[in-house]
Length: 363
Image (cartoon, rainbow, N blue to C red; front, side):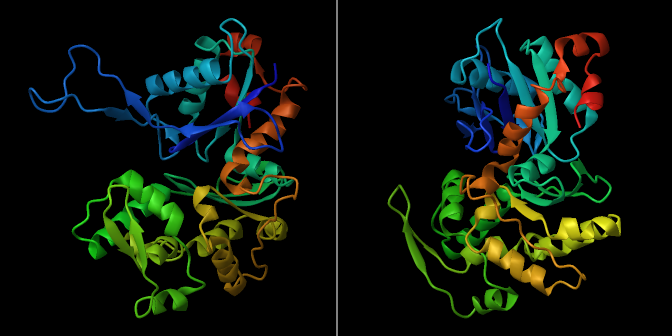
């Protein structure tokens, strides 16, 4: 059986048999519904039991291992078709700065609960670059719950120079919700609907001056919600994208994305600067926002570094939405190498050394 690749994010879990030039076969919400057991009650006596949701992954890291185990059982046995007693090999993508304890807990879960025949894990930044045929470069990964900037030199993340910010797509959704509430005060919009509106309407202005001009003149869009209410969307659509270049909009005293990228790469040895700047890769669902890539490159062209960041163009044979699934696709490429060449963690390795083996064999 071919190896399975799993990329578990805060919003979506991507999984499937390793097929390097294809999108993952399964893309499903990470959020789960929890069935209340007998004796548990909802809020308030006599009230109807409300649906309880659980987030196994928060800001990129697993926080609820029981829920994660249930989710993986559903994915691996029900959806992918593993048989108990005949489990295959599995590769997981690791977010930047994954704590050692979480890596050990994952490998322990895989061998002791799922009885996998082989395990491997690799960092998302490295895998995303593999997906575009690079072993060196710098990834800017805008996830649902975090933003990672990671310089990668010859297949290894330069952790000292890397940056992680605990903001992401969910924070942009909440910002969009607040802005829409200001202009549509009588309308109550569910956050899941806000998420859909953000994906449909949010965009980036060409530059800061163009964004500033939207205060005086901005096209009005009218949108009818599923319940029939009509809302207006004006400047709010631009504020979402602008927050990535002006974090003060989110109330943060941070530099914008391009400045953060330049500062990150500048702390790496100068011999790698050209490779890193000229192989910059945008990843994550937010990277596909209308106008974002163009705005990022425009800002990059204005930066003061001697070498200006240039975005990697994905190979023509890769799917169009590569940025959204790049870590999974890179994982599929790596799975075709590490398992056939026996570079992975085997059951014998695990039994001999324990969970700490993951730090020695997976990097």
